[in-house]
Length: 398
Image (cartoon, rainbow, N blue to C red; front, side, top):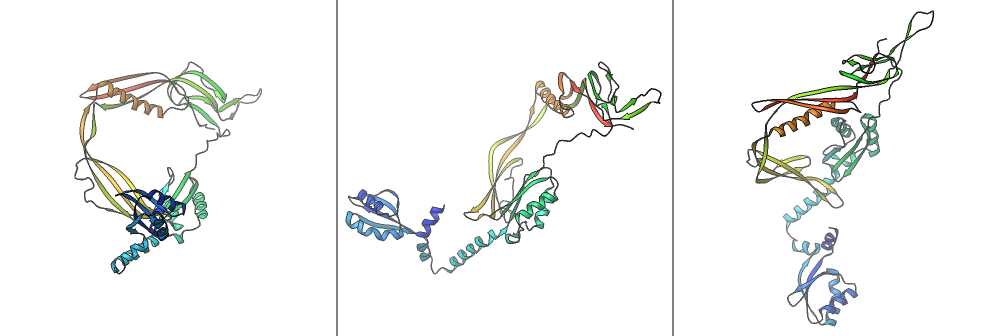
């Protein structure tokens, strides 16, 4: 790109060289430092591109080599201006274009906020606006980048790091959110450990607190397994109690179940092979559609959108983008699923629901899938047998 711009500014001519000593002529030009490019056969000779300032130095070499040189065309800024001199409309348009490309990059026309998952995007946008970063804002009115970064980190709780990048007429605000630190157990607060679900205890290890159950016992959800209220006995004194933060591992055989209804039909969206393109322009943050019907006249369609930003060398994005939407016509069709396919999908979904409720370290020992069918509707129940730690902490009643 830069080479083409430099060649246009410097100017060049395209010449033809004919005669017996064409190779010697090229070698002597290169030996004398003349800029010749893109040599290719042309008629009975060669066609060359020569820088305009070097062309006048060829006369001596042309006479020495005995070749015939003829100018085919001239190109460059000087030639272009000379050719269009006296055309007032062209001059006004050229001046307007120059003013446009000089003025537009002095403003922000697009603001992007990337890396946000849990933080409030509207809060970040409001903070950037306070610092002069918004669509249509002049660049000279933007606060110091370090000030923007520090303000974002201190005012928004979920942000750990941030930085503002100015790319032409685009402001890109990159955010890195805080990774939650692991929770530190409060060992001073008295707690009981209760059963999270029904089960048969296999191991009952008590580290702190008073044991209420033993291995082999059947417990129900909510039963106290380890109490934080510990009796203290002293001979000759009435019974006393201390309250501790209970700790222990209660591993039990449990059964979790989930059920739902599933149909043996699914709706498919099939592309017919017909497609159209829909182009829209985005000028300084506002979108202008070039077609009235974004769906291309299709009743059912899918759309794949790609955006192309207009960027200039040394300037970058100038606030103009083109969005190309590939619109594909689709038709809907009902697909009948077999019994095995319905049950496989049902098992996968019900397993996911159960696993969301489990704690770390749970191990599946067995599972059982049962179902009934009525008019193409499957009532499916999945029972999953597990070995897991069912103890959960709750505040102890002092």
